[in-house]
Amino acid sequence: MRLGVPDLIFNLGGLSNIIWFFAMLLVSHKDDIDALALFSKEDRQEEREKKKERLESENEEGKERLKETETATEKEGQTTTTTTTTTTDASEQSETLEEEGGDDEEDESETRREEIEHSQDTIEKQRHAVRLLNVLLMHNSRNVKEMLDISGYELLSRIIRRHNWALDETLLALLFNFVGLQKSMGPSLRAAPNEMLRPHPQLSAYVYEGVTYLLSACQ
Amino acid sequence: MITSEKTKPTVLKLTPTYADGVVANLPAFINLILNRRIWKKASFQVQEILFETLAKLVTTHEHAAFNVIRFRSANVMEKLVMMFQQEERSLPLSLAPSFITIIRHIMTDPPCAEDLSV
Image (tube, rainbow over all chains, first blue to last red):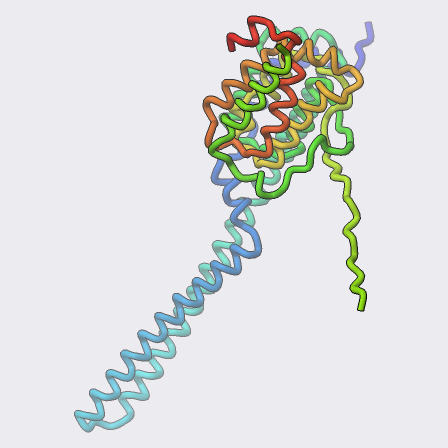
């Protein structure tokens, strides 16, 4: 008997293995997601500005020390050669500070870039895995039965929650696909103004009013 | 001089929803879509799309009656009320119209004892 592709996939090990694979996927830790959010251009700019300020303040401190030493040497009546040497030392110190600061910045940006690439790669893998699971469920009814037997949806929800998956629109679309719903563009039921996008302390009262109105209308 | 005031054209807000189809897979619907523990960490925009889709499924949808039956069997009413109770201060107000729309369409007319006991 010749098996079709879905049957072949089914015979490879069943859905339990795929769910296990989900759990073994390189998890996107919360730190990665935070790093993604933080690594915007503005944040990088702010960090650079902060570093510059810090370096400048350090340089100012060095200059003040220089001035103090200059005044001290003038009082003592020593030659200016010592001050020149101190100035050169201070300038060298400031240069080395700047170089060190620049190196640190580059290292940090490189590590962050790597983190971001890693987390983006992880998110892509997660999406592909969910798509694969959806295709398997669509093509074979035995997979659906197995999914229900092992309470696969519950496992999947737990994996999403525990492993801090990125909860974006793509994941929402993929999960709606499991339910049997596809994307459709249409006018919204209501247009919410921006001021309504913040949490509201009296939400329950608002909803309570709505529900009591409905109940009174029903009676 | 007559100042010509430019009237702004009314822009119809188009939001992507996932209302093409019916709630076919009830376990997936309960565990993946109605699971508040997953979606409470999502952005307001994603939450808005989620609840607007749910509201659309029971109002303007072609098979709204079927979806209402599925919603009732998934205990959506209970889940929503529990959500109000637990996240009173963290829920955005923009979700309230969708909640009310869903509750209004799930409730029977007249309301049955089960609805009132929630």
